[in-house]
Image (cartoon, rainbow, N blue to C red; front, side, top):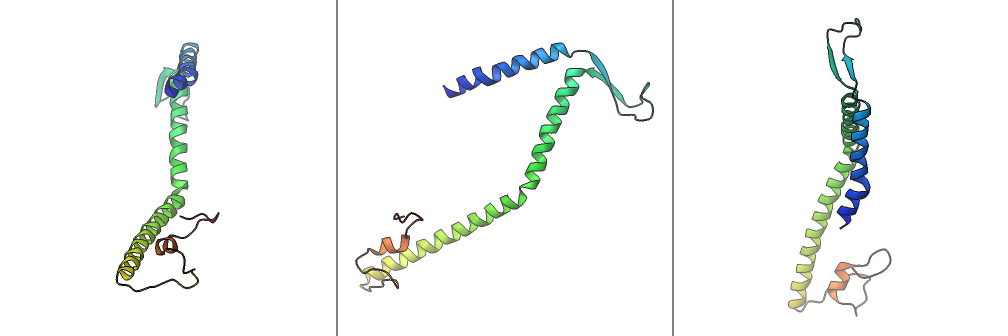
Length: 135
């Protein structure tokens, strides 16, 4: 339902705008790549004006996307590093839980330093978030 509303409100008027733009700018222009002879270029292409403008806009969007992608390299690298750290911490937490569960089955009572004796071992291993809620 939301996609239909999006199509009706954004894509349809945009498509109409592109068609009107193409009809209004259908004159043929010569795109020259020869800076020395502009009257008879050796490297030139004759295209409708709307094709040239739309192609330049597409090229600008692609170039901007590539520049942004390269500019965000350090953030992607940091995200990969944090994900690896989180995987390592989860594995370590699972190992600690297994050891705590095994020690409680053997009858050994190992309460971490500074913890209240009335709390359950699973609560002690998990911890609390910033607002103090149990995780």
